[in-house]
Image (cartoon, rainbow, N blue to C red; front, side, top):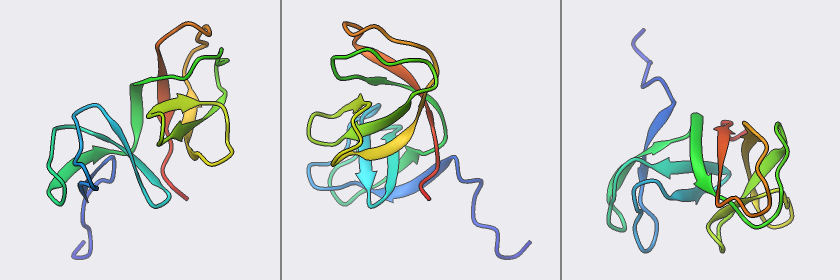
Length: 109
């Protein structure tokens, strides 16, 4: 097909102000991506937008299957929707003190 661009699980994105760090989460409009490598501000980087990734989480328990959001200020996953970007669903329950959570990323709508 002559108009096919790419599969879509990993997108070429432009690093925002301050650049990106491998494994870090970044918001691009309504889209959320996890950087696969470090990149300086303005450089193109490969951002994972689909799949399951392990990300830092805010304090508080998260139940399996809970909708989760990215807090761009605190740079972590939360169940609080207000002022945060919806990124997917928790793959497994996590206790309040757990530092990370596995998230099934969902594409931006």
